[in-house]
Image (tube, rainbow, N blue to C red; front, side):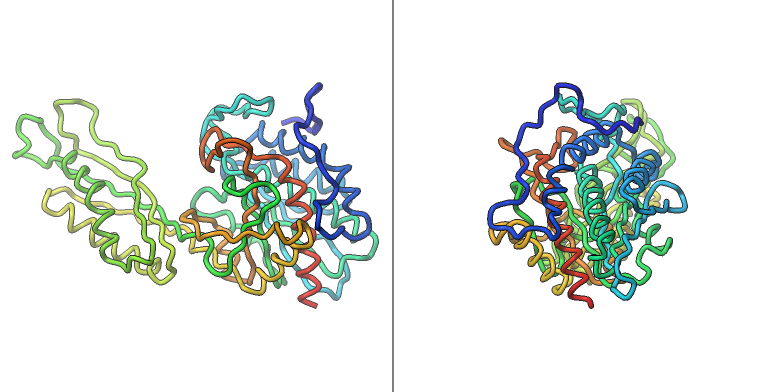
Length: 419
């Protein structure tokens, strides 16, 4: 990874970058002007990150880049114990509260299919969830708030959290919490890209905004045998077929319909030869549920249904149920802060209601300890939008200064409300 964060020669930004949207309130101390000057560099940073993605748990160069940029802004970042994440306090008035802002920094194991100059240079890895945008937004926030702190106008401390391993289990948020990332924090906020919202729209919701998400792996074993004589052995392919077709429907019948439980197997494998009944088979997937109470019961329900379905086949069952993350449940007071910040940053038309998603987000673990909220950042592009976690996903880069303005306003309003 290079350190030259400049746009490629001859590359032109496709859109204009207004200092502040119409109907918004200016940031204090001419920070809008500073942001306008910073935008080309932020876009270059995002494109660099997009070109050099790192998988969950391996974000060492990304963390080093973040630390360098924050240091250049006059801040004192510290790496997480593994060196693949960053925490940075922006110190304002020492008697003020501490508010945290979180960005996730990891990429996904997908091959980038876009034809753009900043396409991923790493085979099989790309930023298909917008974490490069989250990281860039938070770097911009750090640069602006550092200026306020230098002027003695930051009424407290803002903690920037650049978190690794959001996309895997165990969750990176738990590493941050263990490293003291929430010490003294009174509120925490985060953004997540949403390609279903246009640039300039922020999706807000009180209460649950994501689902709980767990990983389920079922391994089946038997003696194996010849496909001519399945009666002399255990037909694991048949058992696997029953598992992946019957279990999801039966599990959903054990819980209230409004709990939104969804079990989907994304991987199934068995055998290597057309005429050999295998001795091993496996299926793995995710269980997602909107309701916290049902989430607590899910492991027991899934285990019982899996064994009931497989039992008649004679296969031996080994079930691995890996707890993932509870739903992100937005605190009402934190949403009030975000709503006010959105109106200030974008005008009243910037506020958009957003439904609860079946996606999982490990930001939820922070909210088990301190109140806070997650907002959806509109990054929708012209033409048909591409959903998150697809190899062709890209974000409208005009969302970056929007996100910076929003999170600066959020931090200032949260600090003022907590005093």
